[in-house]
Length: 331
Image (cartoon, rainbow, N blue to C red; front, side, top):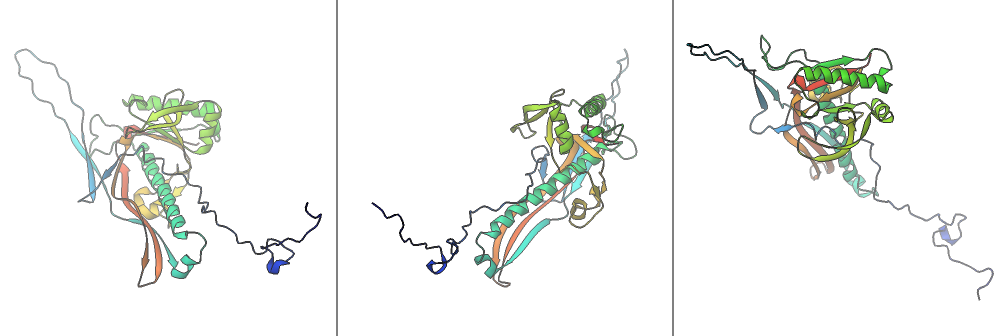
């Protein structure tokens, strides 16, 4: 039988008698560091990124539509002409994220900062790639002509489609946003684009997405990407088009500021996207090429006696088939 009171040893108390019985407890690192809340790339499954090896430029060719004629008895039919055009994108820069850590600091940190920094590099680059591809899709939607023409329009190729909402705040009204999509798809179908068969995707700012979701215009569903991957996601109930919510849909001005997409990728990404609500496009709308896919490396440099955490890639994108892109703008 134990005593009512007895002496105990408190090994975590300083000198065995500190008023705080946990004074000597060392905080244990759980092995997880919360990173920035950035989703992985949402455009990669949609965009057909072509490898650019042995050259800096990838080219896409287009043929104009054919003409019909009537056979006249006693006459040999003459041939009709098909016009051709081309479009290209050039990869001319490498984007790098680098962190440099002093040798001593690496060993005196209770967690592996190099690994966590590398993870953040990847997230930041994924976000930047999304924004770059979405910007080019928006620019494609705003083209009045196709990209495959010189002095005259290439027959059979059209421009993009743009719909502007009537009043401020309409982008948060499910009924008015629904009507805007109906208008957009109707105009795209006039250009022989089938929203479902031609694998269109809708990218929405989150507020507009949840407005449609609350009104049950967007439902759970399954769709197949251009790469043939089946994904559980959201489908626009009325038209069966996949809907993706992303804060990477630009609603700001790109003017070449340091660290911005246009600051990194060049002036062809400049533009005022502050009123963009949604962009709709298929893989055919954007021509993209990659010379260096995303790579990461953590290494120690004997000369500087520092650790380096690097992530880098080289890619580019531009407008391609304008008919396959549309955008909805706020009033």
